[in-house]
Structures are given as C-alpha cells and as structure tokens.
Image (cartoon, rainbow, N blue to C red):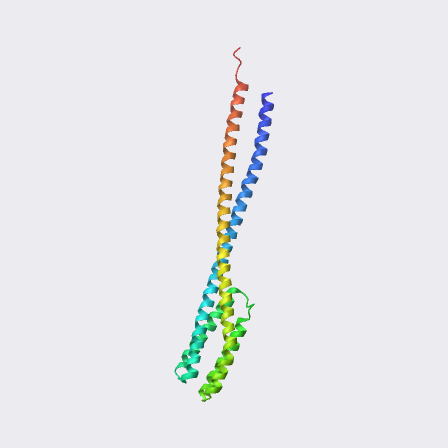
Length: 216
C-alpha cells in the first residue's frame, strides 16, 4: 500500500515537474521577447533623435542661407556668394541624411529643397548682372515657399522628437516587464527545486519506514 502511495507521489512529481518546466521556459521566452522589444524601441528612439537633430541643423543652415541671400540682394557683395553656396550645400547634406535615416520622404522635402535651390540660384544670377529690382522680386516670390519648407521641416523635427520620447517610454516598459518575467521564472524554478527536494525526502523516509523491521 505504501509502495502504491510512493508511486502515485512520483507520478505527481513528474507531472508537476513537466508543468513547472513549461512555465519556466514560457516565462524566460517572454522575458527574452520583451528584451528584444526593448532594444528595438531603443534603436527606434535613437533613429528618431538623430533624424530630428539632422533636420534641426538643416533648418539652421537654411535660415542662414536665406538671410545671406537677402543681404546679398541688398548689398551686392560678391563675397557672400561662396558662403551662401557652402551653407546651402550643408543644409542639403543634412536634409538628405535626415530623410535617409527616417527611411521615407512623405513630406516631399527633398523635392521642395531642390526647387528652393534653383530659385535661389536664379536670384543670385539676376543680382550678379545688376538686375537689383528683378532679384528682389524673385526673392520675394521665393519667400512663401521657402518659409513653408522651413515650417514643414520644423513640424517634421517635432514629430520625430515626440516619436523618440514615445519609443523610449515603450523601451522602459518592455525592460521592466522583461525583468519581472525573469524574476518570476527564477522564483518558479526555485519553488520547483524546493518542492522536489521536499517530496524526495518524504519518499526516502517512506521507503525507510516500509523496509524497517517490525519491533512488535
């Protein structure tokens, strides 16, 4: 009868062990998945921050280029042309890098930037041949679209900053969940070991009792 009881106990231990192992594996798998999710969100946040930074630099260069162009139209100082061209080239470089990092150009900023550069070159060309009034009129005609481009880029930069904050928050949440899952898996594993030890000791004692000679 005692052997039957021990056999049932061993069967119970085996079933419980299988269930426990499955639970531990599931918890660890979920923990790893959450860690991967956290890293993915961190990468996403870093990409959004880089994009917003590059756009910010492009905006600063674009604003400087516009101010220099206006100064050139007024003064006709030829020394300003290389500076305008250099600043404009840097703005294009930063904008292109930002779009590449973002992976898309839904706002059509590269096309708008290309159009603005062509118009800028036209203003410079008119001023170089002494067409001051025509250059001023061309600059005035360029201003609305140029300002709209800058405003659109500013909005894009803001959206990327918001995306970075959101992704960072998601990464922190995923990291917290992963930590709790890992701890839970460890606790379950420890409980399994403790329970197995208790049952094993109990079985050993029962076997000892069964095999012991009767003193009556």
